[in-house]
Image 1 (cartoon, one colour):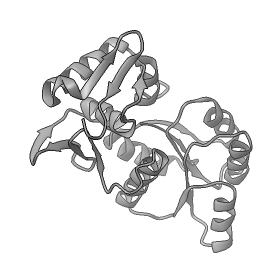
Image 2: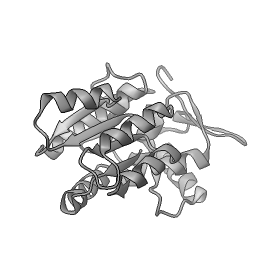
Image 3: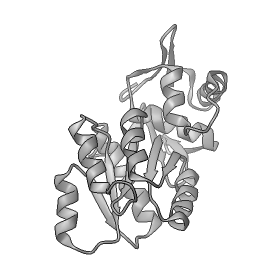
Length: 222
């Protein structure tokens, strides 16, 4: 999953980047509201973490521009402001959730997971489940019939994306856009290697190849 972090406090941004990457997310970081307004609307992010007090353009104005332009990407607001009125303004502008600074990193992680599941119609799932597999995002492993299967970080990122999109055909290009940040080299051959390794651990029937189209995760009931 590819996230955009918009935060002008450098030390906090560094801390969040390290934490989010450790959770298997690809993260792009911006510190200016003007840059965020453009990049958030033009890059295929799965979720955006947005600070309100930004230089260049205030976070609320950026959010209003995104929503007015039809951007449906989930947005989680970070704010140091304690006023309930400002939090309400953020929700009215189109935010999906908010966290008031300071916050515990685990709370941010759980809120991100919940927003991503909600965005894909899986809000009622306490964890990702599809094709007989249960994904433990905190431990980055998967369980099937009570058996725990260990994953590498790359396998975990790929499987999580598949499990959020069960039954959908996903091209290699699409997967690369959502699994790597803007600075990473995107190699479809590397993706193919990780898919084959997942098949070796989970069974070939779990991930189907659609010639000329991409891959399809089997989905619920497979």
